[in-house]
Image 1: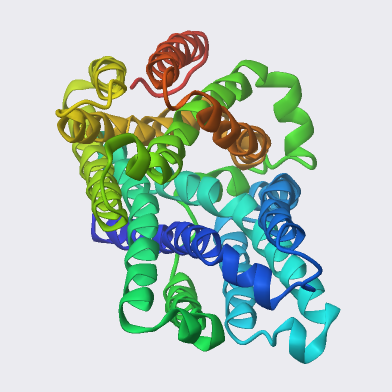
Image 2: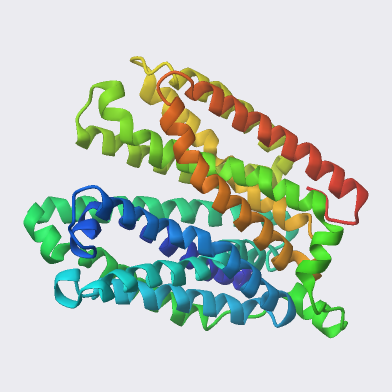
Length: 411
């Protein structure tokens, strides 16, 4: 029990760092546009900054294929450590990277290289954490353990938000642009070093040790997964839609709160932070309840709640904040994505199949979701929330079908 708890804590650290950096890069995008790109005009430097940000997402599937392959053939532990290393080093380089004014286009190239390196690492980081924890904990506690992983991912968003708020609270705009933006990245770098030290203490998962001892390791696990686990990969795709809905409600929609609700920027930020806390609490509670009542029953109840409260907050009336926070609590259904996905792949192909399907889907939906929300948030946000609810239902039906047809653990 103590060993499982320790490994769950250590495994969660990389996900926190990923989402922490995600928020920081977005919040400081305007500054990066000024200091890392040639200032030909006001438009293209900012566009290029977001292209650099997107390059990390495009690199995710490549990282997933490479690292997940070795996770299935050489072991989960070593790959898990390497993925963290590839996240920490670029974060530290970014914290001390000279500006375009100092080193010219080399600063621009370094920014792109940093994002690509982080993308390669992240490609195996989150899915690697899900798999690592699922193969360590008791099946009776898998809901709470993976709910905890989902909660800590969201915690990274909260920490990034708070770090950005503190920077702008204690420094002027000129100071932020000159040097203060580097402080949160330096803090993230030190946090990464701590994570590396702790990850070095991880043990190999019992399930991988079992297939290694039985000599059932595959030479090309992804090839086998594509042949034999097509339906499982479809489930990963559907569950990724549910996961990216969290980004939609927590990161994209709050950008419009000032205009939609006629409130101040600070109030909008408070709403956003309360919403993140609601998702964190929701993921933990739902993971706990799934261990008691079963994952399917719990997911059905909270998927309905997400659709209902998502519909109600979409009117943006005086009761908005209550319905919005309830919807965010129900958004804790993100914890069921790893619960379902880790149980529908054979151990021999689990890392390759899950990581490939999840990261390909995330690269697609991570790009499409912001564009979709930007187009519909005023009048049709409720359609999106109900759509996510229905996707969750379809995913559960497919998971049930897979578990029934194969010799997997019941949920």
